[in-house]
Length: 127
Image (cartoon, rainbow, N blue to C red; front, side, top):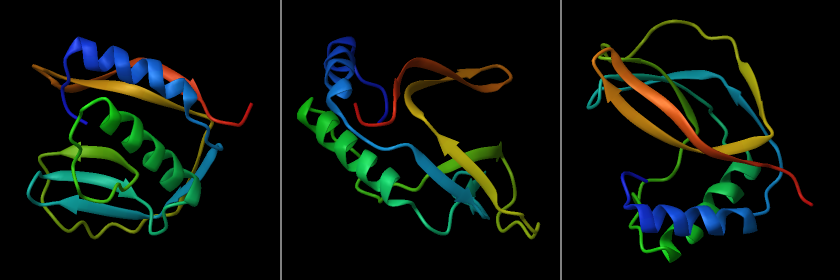
């Protein structure tokens, strides 16, 4: 989403509780490198429908708050390393990740790298 001003952030936070989404189970089964960014990530060869549904609802909420989003399709990922060479050749055993909540996270650049700070989180599951 990128940096937004405080007013927009408050508006987004007020709207997110209206989202209804199921818990998500995803199998991270591949390593992906982005040579343009020098980033190595765990990714999944199949995005579960639950995450696609959640992302679509978040796009609507965030768009309604006046934020222009990246047009690339969302890909769930876990960043493992930065400043790496592209095309890793390491074999990977599938890792199952079960999510029962989602969060608004701020990335903060520090002298030792990037720190991620959870600003707020919301449960997954229908009421």
